[in-house]
Image (tube, rainbow, N blue to C red; front, top):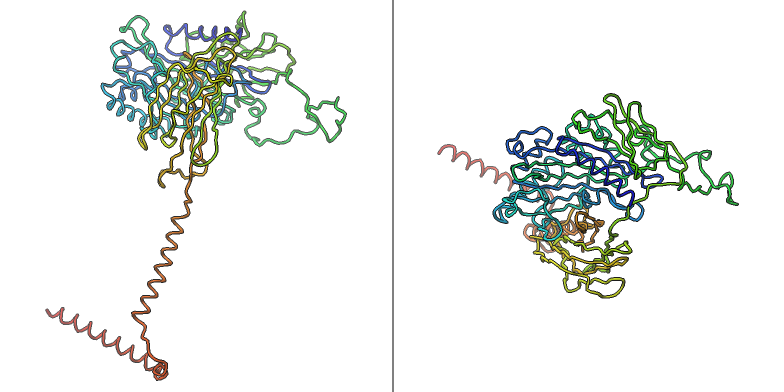
Length: 581
């Protein structure tokens, strides 16, 4: 609870200057394990709605703003994620899960339109434009991958009352999308300092995509503080990554991991089998790993961004006050008296670096407990049918959890709604309070399932349902069809907190793609044999044996040559007659 209060303290202090300044940035470092580090980069820009309508962009990126205007998009949320968040070992998700997306790419937006058809057209315009801006495959979010959530997402409170009636929510996912450096580069170009100064100078594709888990998010929402006449448009860009300290400290010119020399191994000498060739690893859980910003990210922080003038400390770290922390000259440290948060103000000039030496310390910053543990997997066997099982656990011993569970299932997973069951602690009880179901249409739209569930304190709910696998057409299989089809993660909404389960890999009945070539070869062989047989019947002359002896090979050649000459003379005469005419 103390850690949560510290995080709320820094987040609240971070947002206090929203109306006073137009650009903010902050880096929050939080050790998760003696060898793991969570780095959360947060960037926020504001612009007035009047300036946005007049295309007078200063801190708000022009490229994204013009796309939103062209597609009549009033609120936008875009996510790029890779990896799996280990809630049992790492605690609650950063930002409460509000800025997390499912594996791959996830996009949802509120589009202003008069009808559903008009909203679909503007949604198509938005996805195609964002696809080109972020070098992603967002243009593949078609009608089969688009849903209209009813209970899972809610618009922000900053929308004007005159536009709320015409807002349409559309949601799409691409769990197969591979996030890479091509997506990071346009992300940095949207920032005012564009990765050249400030905390964004630490962002490097080699470090980001080598992380155990990483997420990039972009949120655009309106803010109306004093009525509809005083509205702003706010863009928040966030990058969260879980870094392995030992792997991140590996030098750039020597990235290949190599065995540790024997003299550097930390062995438990109290073991009876300890010898020169046998080593039992020493437990170093009580010893914090030493690291620095320059070691983790490859270089130090390139000064502060000159456009961030709100006075908020740009770098914070969540460690006990007894932990030794050394910074560059000129940095000012501010400690949270009621928690573990320590923030640093950067000097106006020069690079900035933080060093935490290796230290034995008994006090550790506690990890915040998540509101819900969720895991999802396939059950059943065979190529025709299967099932999905979601295990949802409420770890709180006193408070119940009310949440919405949403599934976006592709059309080739034909859901049997009558098989939907929810068991609490192994007993059949009515825990489903509300449900919204939209069936799929083959090759037109997927299945949408939203269920509101109430889990009592210290209880576990197992949600299961069965489905049937469809057989696709030959051209609908991807090049690596034997790998399987990626199924989007389920979205769990608990108020303002969102949790994504892991994505699933569905194997479908796959045809033998070598059969077309076998058919071509067999058909060609049959045609060649048939043609040869018929040709022999038409051309070959059949005679008796006694007549065959009378045929001289030389006479046959002479007759063939004479026939050829006669044909040649005949063609020449015809050519001369046509020429005279």
